[in-house]
Image 1 (spheres, one colour):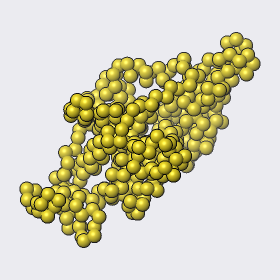
Image 2: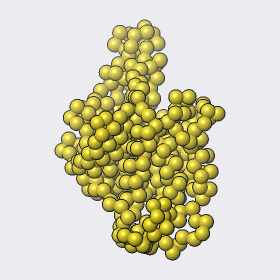
Image 3: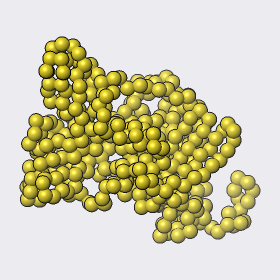
Image 4: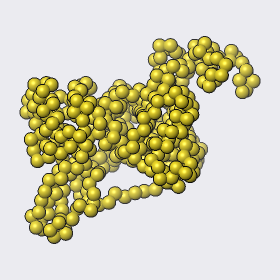
Length: 404
């Protein structure tokens, strides 16, 4: 008999997973859901990007549900203002990295859980190869830039992902399935697409400090978003399961968005199809050639590895993120090569060392394997471990993975 006084046989079919349930089994109640497949969860590898208010709730639920492997990525340290919205953190954790504390806490909930904390920004810490090895990605972010990077790498890796967002009175989740429907960028309005285009081509605001907005949030709304996100994750992972052909939850189509508002109370669902403005779907599905090269190596070293493996030497390595290629001062004709990811460029280096005036910047999305930046470590250019990079010469191009 369950908590409402009904036996499992009343009004539904017994779960195929009931046979695995036993006295003392922590997952006994969820195994009793018709079509539930606990082994599917135990075999799943989920990437969680962001360990703040939503990410905390998501990680807690994944551990409680019995997921087998979680990689979590976040660059921030715990602050006192986080404690009212993050159930995994305690006052004594202030100052520590969020992912390290979160990993400890969820491992204590389920000792069989395999946890891989990654400290750093998603863009430079998680390559497409890491995403391709995951069954699902859950985005718990407050950054448009990071969301764009997650979206494009998930599409390239053909890995589904679910984005969650909140404000002070509403929670919204968006399901992205690479094989169908729209993606995160497809759901953006034309103004946002203009901002994206400017980010990759314009250096006007390069040297200005980024504006930091603090959004009002409350733990209940964050928890609502996280629970919706994990529920949709369960539906996606059970979809098409051989041992549970009748999924216990309706698997959402790609482009499905669910929004819950608390003022006024309202639940709304929409479906976004692929947009003609979106360029995130332009990448081909070509599988990469793995190479022993790592992010500590340079573009020239990568070209040599490709020549040894494939028999031809590329002249260009294309990058996911724009880099500051060169700085120049119009007043005193001072210029120099830089070679650093745009978002990592320190504003303190904007001034010309001769006259003190602000220098102009040239952005690039590629690096020549025999050019001035050919010896720059790929990590400095913003390339993450296990990145998938497109390389080319005048006649051909291919995709490689940094597996070293």
